[in-house]
Length: 117
Image (cartoon, rainbow, N blue to C red):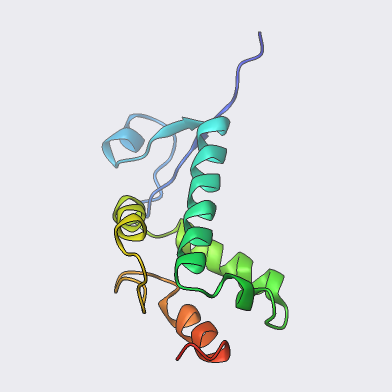
């Protein structure tokens, strides 16, 4: 059986491998765990865009692939994934994303372009 290599998440402290990493809050995860995490956050952004009615509008902006990649990166870097998932589930027809949403400005521009604002 082949072992899956571990990835090390380096926090802002930027520690080297060793005991000081775990003390600094760095965690080890398998590559599969990492992929699942990335996929879940990407899906969360898609759900937010759909909930606010701008998912189709996003596909019409110039260079939409790069814009989408940057939006996904912002979502992945957010620390509110659990709150966000709950917010999406609990809000039927919201006008705006939550205040902590890192894509709030993009969503507002997409809503304006779609005539929703």
